[in-house]
Image 1: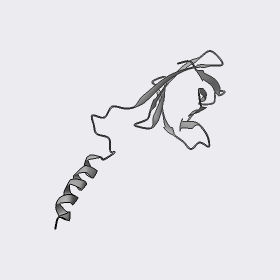
Image 2 (image 1 turned 120 degrees about the vertical axis):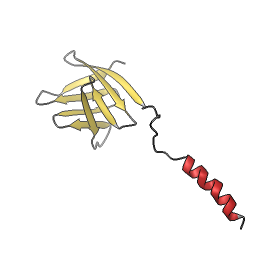
Image 3 (image 1 turned 90 degrees about the vertical axis):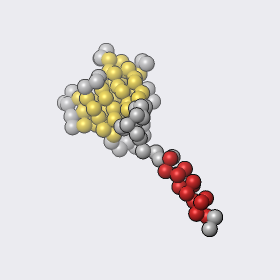
Length: 102
């Protein structure tokens, strides 16, 4: 009979430790600036809570499979990287190689 009173507090602790985000949970975002080989600057925000990357506050990319490093994409845009190096492809343009500067 004593198991029931002990089980209820344990259940309350498990429910209280839920990993689901709440509306007041701040997004965990990493902002990086890259300088590309052609001199272009790219600003990329990696939102780890929503698992998206936003390039120059204009293009929102979803994660894609990657053998190593990271990969985000949409139709017509591709962002791949490892460490402080990325490759950015927009449409039919030649891919840009870029290095983090901040």
